[in-house]
Image 1 (tube, one colour):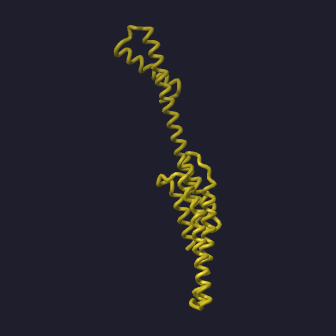
Image 2 (cartoon, one colour):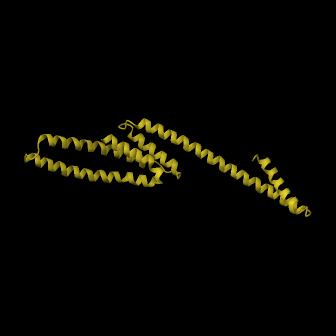
Image 3 (cartoon, helix red, strand yellow):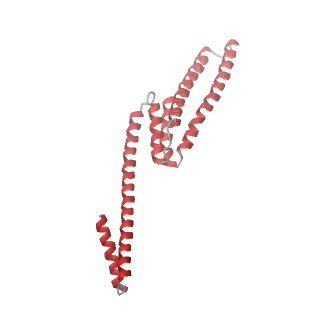
Length: 195
C-alpha cells in the first residue's frame, strides 16, 4: 500500500504542470508534509498510549496489538518516504519557465522516490522523453521567433530603402511606388536570407 501512495505522489507532482499549478504551489504543498507528519505522529502517540492501556487492562488481544504496531511501522515508513520526496521538491530552484520547472520538480520527486519506488526507472524514462519533447518545442519556438524577427527587420529595412528612393524621386507614385516598396522589401529579405 505504501508503494501505491508514493507512486501517486510522484505522478501527482509529474502532472502538476498539466493543471497550471505553479512550482511555488507544489513546493508549498510539499512544505505541508512536515506539518502533516507532526499531526500524524501525535495521533500515533495517542493511539499507542491507548493500546498500551488496553493491553494492560487486557481488553485487546496480542494479535490485534501486533497488527496495530505493524500498521504504525508502515505509517512511519511512508512518512519518511513522503518527507524525502517533499524535501527534494522544495530543493528545486524555480527558473520561471513553467514547463521546465514542472519537469525539474517531477524529476526531483522521482529521484527521491527511487529507493522505494519500483516504477521510478519508467517514470524517469517518461520524464526524459518529456524533456526532449519540451526542448524540441522550445527550439522550434525560438527558431520561429528568430524568423519572425528577421522578417520584421527585412520589412523595416526594405521600407526604409523605399522611403529614401521615393523621397529622392517624387515622380514615383501609385502602382510604381507600390512596386518599388515591394521590390525593396524583397531585396532586403534576400539580403537577410528570409523567404
